[in-house]
Length: 538
View 1: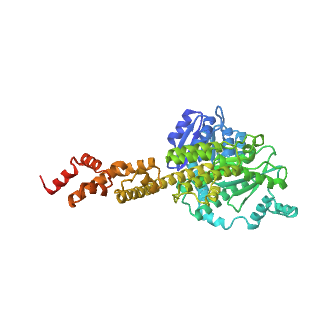
View 2 (view 1 turned 180 degrees about the vertical axis):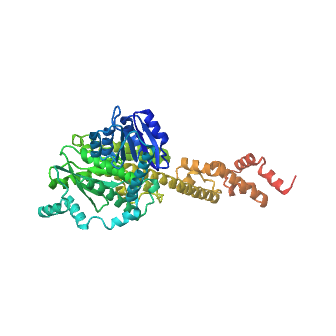
């Protein structure tokens, strides 16, 4: 179902067309109707129509002005002019604007329905031509000759003699007629979560679809040539009207991005170099376009980036490095073990880096320092979680297209590290507490056994051990030791004939009197009374 909007300042006419037209049967959904061109133009971005039916004579913005705006920005939208004026001048202007058709009022319902059916067939053919993947696969093997692509790429690099350049331009770039020239370079942004599982063949198909769309738009205008680079970018050399403005290149780039999003369901970023006064200066514009595209890393994807805009003011010291305490703040957040606090630290640091105005290469330097600090901290824990970054992470970050992508990856990595550290610490702590119990059980008979002895055995501070031991056993070290000694004393009193003072020594009490006091406090009986009770002596 195609989306269509209707514009006419006469309410009766507009309502009559809406009511009498079988929109759905004709393959259309009427997504909006307006009484003037200005309101319709403001709604274009949100409604994204495939076709527009508009009157000519309207207040605020007439139909021809609206058509001109649509042609500049949405060239694949079909426009039909409907008017009661039969003046040839209107028709002539409409034809120059490449209006799809010119219809006269009053509209005959049957004729208008037949017209919509014809328009739907045209739209079907265009969509089939642009979306047919089998056709794209075929064209992938029948694209521009390899020689043309290699010439343009070599020319862009500047590694070419004057004689090679002149001969190749005449053969492959004859459409570059000036008066000025500019380079644009585009690259598909990484797909969202829904497309993260794209196969290599799908990715290549999308790249070729992008190239196909760029080529069709640029070369159909007769003002440029398109080629692919070896790192999966698509570039174009354009003829532009003047050397001081990138407006023409920006408009064309916007059209390309709109078409790629519409037909491939992918977003695209494009870099634009400064206009050059001669073809020979195009390699410099190409290098600037690449530099502008690099700013996607800092500024985000899905945008057109002109070198004149992104580097404005850099020479005056406006670019500022982020806070040197960034790494310390992240490590402090990691020490809390709280993933939300870590996310907040990362968000603040990345916001500062994004607003710094630094070029991508300098930003990578700050990111490398941050990741190195994180790796050092993980190493200091001695637990080595599997999710901790390795040396290959620096190359991985270089492959990411935007700071937002790096932040999302680093946030996930930090949370995974915290989870693994927590789990490993729990395991280690449990093992340490089991060892503490074993040590106490083996040495409880030593009158001199103390908290410091156990902590020294485990290489732990007394305060940290006391906290963990109480969590593990539910009691303090002193209470645990006392209960263990009393339990052993009860057993000896019940099954042996040892004297009380001998039993006291065997369970770690050198003073028999103190042993008797502690024993009665815990059992309610003296050792002698307890032994008698166990033997049934009254």
